[in-house]
Length: 398
Ligand code: GLA
View 1 (cartoon, helix red, strand yellow):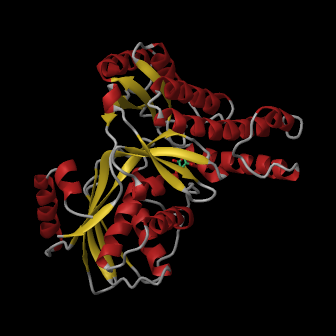
View 2 (cartoon, helix red, strand yellow):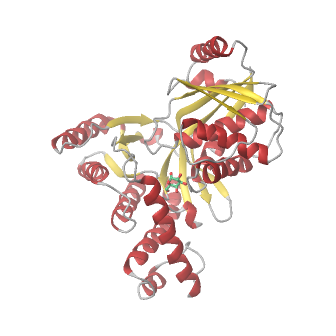
View 3 (cartoon, helix red, strand yellow):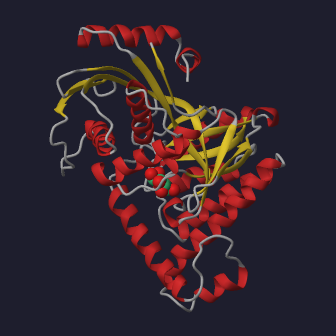
């Protein structure tokens, strides 16, 4: 909970620049600086809302918020990314059908007011370097960063698990996106150099060391630049299908999506229609892969981890049907590229990004090869980025 997160990640000079901007804009000094990271999910996709396992890690890219309180019940929030100032009153804050970037900010105030946190208004400056709409959870990093900032301002020292759940609630109930817990949880609790294993059913978690550096490996992000317009509706459709499949499983004495293997899984095939069966097969298989991936990481067995990443992608593509041709192209290019151990789509899918586990020296070659193949097919020009594993949210007094 101190300044280093700013100083090491974005540089003191950048913090000074933000403070300067804040003062020019709001004619007052910011009192709090807070930040939270975006994430990659190493494995465990579409399992969080199915009471399953996930294994995400924070990236070094973060959303930063500077704040100072106001006495008049008004919130002024400036986004450097959108270069827009939004203003709203805390009185009568209600979810509405109209959505924009500041809806996320309103959602955080709404959820805190609901928790009886006394808030008198605020001036806020936001600067994010998590790419937007790329499947790296910029929204959770904004929600959690803001929660940390406002709670610091209110001198409340709440457990990170509780803060993560409030972020999720704001997104579910105010913004209207029915996401699971993974993104907010890792934004709040991540540790540098570690992946975060979470059992979304029990809330139990553990840190798994990620010794990539020693193995000469990095995670490469490949942003397809395919707009994720369908993501919302298709995401909810998958949730509903998975829910149906789970109800049928329960009726047949299989209440959990975890630890289901072999014969039991096959038995399900006759109990539900084929689409539901494939949705269930993905979730059950993915949960098993997360456990295997966790064990592989403990042993620094990155070859096995890579195989699991490919298997996860194929299951997401064929059984859960949340991939798209642009993501598949990258994963195939990755599969054929020497020095790439594994790759898969990351986040909700339907566009957005893929990750690849790659030897350092192979990064540029893989990025170039995939981009050339994308161009040949007239796909959008992708963007690539090597990420390092960052730490969770923090807030401090300036
Ligand atoms: C989005 C949601 C997460 C999770 C993933 C899919 O990122 O926000 O909660 O469901 O999709 O794994």
